[in-house]
Image (cartoon, rainbow, N blue to C red; front, side, top):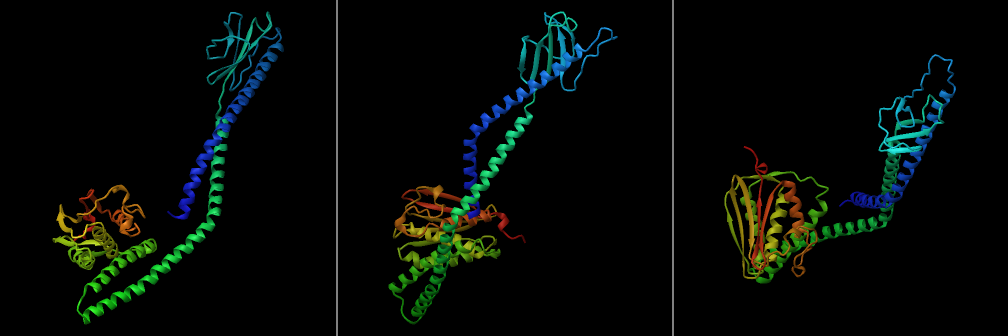
Length: 387
């Protein structure tokens, strides 16, 4: 995972945790603001009721008629002591007549008791409006959003600041590994060349064979590490590959390694359609499968490698009769090893998984403990060049 993705991931987690912690005070703030908003609405209703009362007080009986005050967002009405309307603009049924401010869902109303024998014989004045908490919700959402953004930005800043020393150490370690891998290749090539020259001039012997097999194991590890370091920086161009010849060449390459454990590689290679794939990536898939089959097989056993066409798709399988796999779901995790005594770094199958996912190659695994494992790769038709 890249540093920026790592920082963003944990900054998001930290932001969520902090936001959850802040939800409690924010909830109480929301309740408080709702109460404040309700009180403000009550004051508005009282203000409107005073305007109605003032208008009725200013009315003179010498006037031909009384023009009852009307408001855009407020409704009001006059009621007698039996709660029957004398004059009302309310399209709302009042179920609870008692002096004071009342809330019924989103409806808010104020009941004001009037002096008797005054105000057109009315006993009650009711002023009503719709109470909306949209402003409160908007404020709370804005506060929450601001907190989340601020905490996330601060989290990113502090995580990246705290991570700088570790990033420098990691960069130095990465450079060290890259330099080490590069330095390994030169002496490894020299050893291989000199072994080949010796074998040409002298009779082959078991010691040289063992040395040659050991260098091939090292070469496979080197190629994995080199691919792991460079795969993000290089673009692997596809080529048309004749699978049968390619697979035969890789089997021949590992034959000396297999002989070290007296393992026989049985190959059944039929014709298979050409595929379009990068040779280095295909080599990593094949080499890691053969290498693992040898590594986890018992001495004096066999390995079956097959290549065939089925349903117009190329099938390639590797079968060993070794220790089997305990945790199939975990073998593709980087640095995971089923048996640390077998050596390796646990990166081979992680590389294989990344490549086959990229190329849409299907993988089926059949494994039984103490009996062996089969890895079957099915190449999609899209990898087959069209004629």
